[in-house]
Every structure is written in structure tokens, then in C-alpha cells.
Image (cartoon, rainbow over the protein chains, first blue to last red):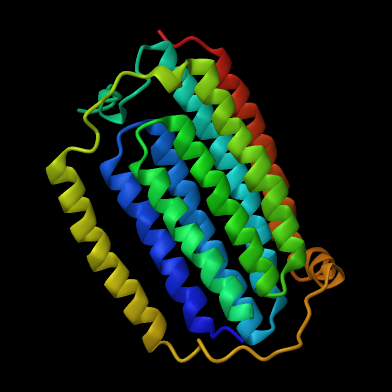
Length: 100
Length: 164
């Protein structure tokens, strides 16, 4: 059997990859993909703990996270489309209208 | 055997994750993301969460990746001008912060007493999840349906209106 720690370390690696992607990339779509990867890493942690403790709550939580992630992607992509109508399509740093 | 499957899936997942971040072409990033999600579905099967693996494929690997690709094509972003978004000092600072974060998270996981050895033979059941959703978790379940409705309306409003 694969020890639970291996899954947890893998999910940490995926989470950090996503976090670095959010930090260094400036294409809004890639930033969103990185956020999705972070959510997936958290899901892997939840499924691992659900397996280790044999508790269904972790799996239910993953389902809820997936639903919220789907909603988040729909809103985020709508924002990206709205930004693209204003000529901001390739760089999140250009979207600074709300900056004081 | 299980260890080999885990090693292959984990390696491919990490490499695909790095590909998402490092690729300059958005379409390639989206396809690497697809590989990453598929690997996670395999890992869910290893963890006896077969229902979640199927949902992972349906929701993430098809719906969300297709949505991403759809927006890429809609906006013509596959030909987006090359922004210097991986400038050297950005990459170095990102990698340093990432290494710090990785160290912290791994230390927290390893130090926690919970990550014990996995007992073999416990099989999760879709019936178990369904029963939990409609009893103990009925309020979050209903709230999520409201969240989805609000997201649906919000996405339509955001994508239709022309801001001045």
C-alpha cells in the first residue's frame, strides 16, 4: 500500500506549483488554470484524509469544492471575456481600473 | 504494483503541473491541465474514491478544460502577443517563495499525526456519499445549488453587459 504521506506530499507539490503559477504568470487564463490546480491539490488532500480515517465527510467536501470551482470558473471566464472587450486580454497587470 | 502506479501518476501529474505554469502557449497549458486532472482521477481510484474519480473526469477534465479552450478560441488568445510574463527575476522570486511554501506545507503534513498508514480493503460507496449529502450535509448541498444559480446569472450578466 502507498503510505498516506506520499499523497499528501504530492498534493503539497501540486499546490505549490499552482501558487507559483499565480505569482509568476500574467496571462489571466493561465492564472485561472493555476488556481484550479491549487483547488485540485486541496481535493487530493481531502480524499487522502477521507481514506485514512475512513470518513465520508472528506468525499462530500470534495464534491462541494468541485461545484464551487465550477461556479468560480464560469464567473472568472466571464470576467476575462468582459476584460477582453476592453482590450485587456493578455496581461492581468493591465486590469488596474480599480486601483486608487 | 500499486506503488508503481502511484509513482507514474504522481510523476506525470507534477510534470503536467509544471507544464501548465511554464508553457507560453495557452492552448498547451490547457492540455497539460487536462493531463494533470486525469492523473488526479487515477489517484482517486487508488484511494478508493471511484465516484469522485468519475466526477473529476466529467467536471474538471471535460467541462472546465473545454470551457478554458472555448474562451481561448473565442478571444483568439492562442495568438496573444508575447508578454514578458516569465521575466527572470519573477521566476527566481516565484521559485524561492514556492520552495519556502513547499517546505512549510510538507513539514506540516509530516509533523501531523494523522497521516498514518492506509488500511487496505475499505471501499467507498456512492450510496454512502448520497446518504451523507441528503442527511448530514443537506444544508451545504442546498447552498451549493444556490451558488451555482448565482454563478450562472452572474456569468450571463458579466458577459452580456458592455461597461462604459
